[in-house]
Length: 252
Ligand code: ADP
Ligand code: MG
Ligand code: MG
Image 1: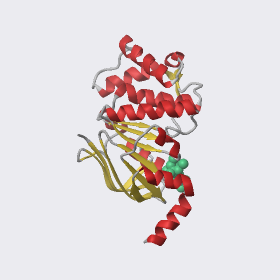
Image 2: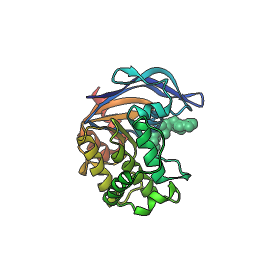
Image 3: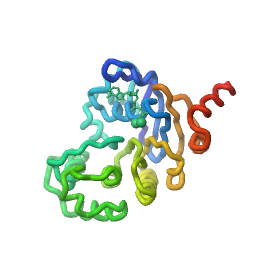
Image 4: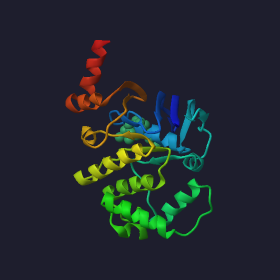
């Protein structure tokens, strides 16, 4: 069992404190869902976990199996088994998607870069078919002309190919059609069953059709304000964040 833990994390972007003491954890095999209104800091948390240098850690820590990773560069975090898929992925059109996939596998295995291996490509093709991605994507530049839905599917494909210790996905179900949501939902469930620990953000209860969360955290204004189970997601869908927060405040 592996554990990824965020402990009392305070993070500033452009000199402004965005995360004000976030704590949460995910273990391998778990599906942890992060919710929260727009601007509550979910993407900031994911960028910080990835190691984006624009996100300044003021205090607190990120621990992988008890060891701090907050000083490590992004590629080292990736090599240790943390894969982060972003809300708005970046296109790198000069690198072929097939080459990126092979590079990820090699880096993860601590090997030098090589040309795409036919076995890896064959496996990627099978995953593409499952996810509803056209086989041509592998010959295209990373993100080159990808639709929003293709971007999301391509990120999940990378995770499935890598089987990372931790799969961190920022709104993997946003901008997808119904088939895409189903495909991504099933893929997430399969990743968790194969032993990856999942941390994903979402705005929608519809993912519950395809995933079974172990735990749900809700963020507001840079803090985790609530921890619960899937009923939290249903309740938020039903009444919205503000009513839910008001209700909780009255109960306290
Ligand atoms: P969420 O993903 O929950 O919608 P974000 O983490 O994207 O929230 O944003 C949290 C807050 O941080 C917002 O107020 C947003 O404007 C601010 N923020 C996020 N990224 C940046 C950035 N790169 N520069 C300045 N402010 C940012
Ligand atoms: Mg947002
Ligand atoms: Mg976001």
